[in-house]
Image (cartoon, rainbow, N blue to C red; front, side):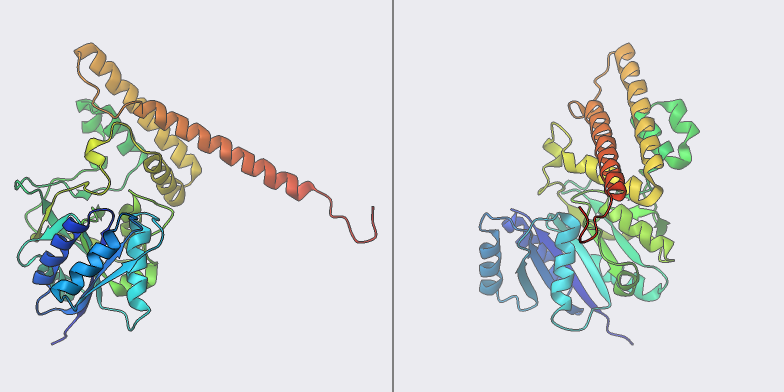
Amino acid sequence: MTNPTLWTIILNYKTPDMTLQSVDAALREMAGISGQIIVVDNDSQDGSFETLEKAVADKGWDRVRVVQSGHNGGFGAGNNFGIQAGLRDGPPPDYIYILNSDAFPDPGAIRILLDYLETHPKVGFAGSNIHGPDGDWHCTIFRYPSIQSELEGAARTGPITKLFKNHVIPQPLPDAPKEVDWLAGASIMMRYETLAEIGLFDETFFLYFEETDLCRRAKLAGWPTVYVPDSKVTHIGSASTGMKTWKRKPQYWFDSRLHYFVKNHGRAYAVAATLAHVTGGLIWRLRCLIQRKEIGDEAHFLRDLITHGLRAAIKRAKMSAAQSANKNTPVVQPGQS
């Protein structure tokens, strides 16, 4: 019988107390499992690193390492740093487990994911059933974004949702393990063999869409992602990002969205996806006007989406013009004037 090794990576950003609670829960659930926990302080610059180091030493957690990234490159970059820190010190593990600093594995959660991957060697990633502290289940399984899903998600209108029912991104939670397009990264276990083949997180994504891209790359390489409902994890949600209190979508969300579409489908597809979202958004706003409903989006969202797309197009045009000018500049040979 094999004894697989597992590394749990927990990324901290200005939430040291909560991160320590997450580490404590992960340590409990890693009892009997070979491996370590690597805590990455993602350049918090608020004393988090020192707090975490001292707490780990005081508690005698010899299976826990605290490392400092030195640069906040976002979710993917921080987790990559933790994985690479482990790889510098010895052989790779069999599995990597990504756990949010505001997520706490319920009893058996980690072992269930590990056993599933051990008994399903062709599966690349396995993710948990996520619920809030009050027990409400979070939607964490999704389809890949598409032109159709952009229209459907923005319009939020029955006939359009019915027409594009096979493109609705959020999926209902099944009672049994199910292959899905992608999972939220709060609690996801990844086969190291898969990562060795497809690479780690794309660090161009600062935050959002990075796990979507990673799961898509894995699936294209023949490594599906599976949702495992018996693995249950309590998740507070948005503790580091503050998403629940956003009044306006941050620039990096628009950057990540555009990068995902351009990288995976091309620039023309990305433009079409944005136009589809704008069309859906206008339909929703017309409906809200007629029915006197609240729009519900962050302030200036549609305007920000359009502005971001136009700025990206202008930047691209300027880069193309500069490249063209450089190609047409004559090369002066030595001795010529």
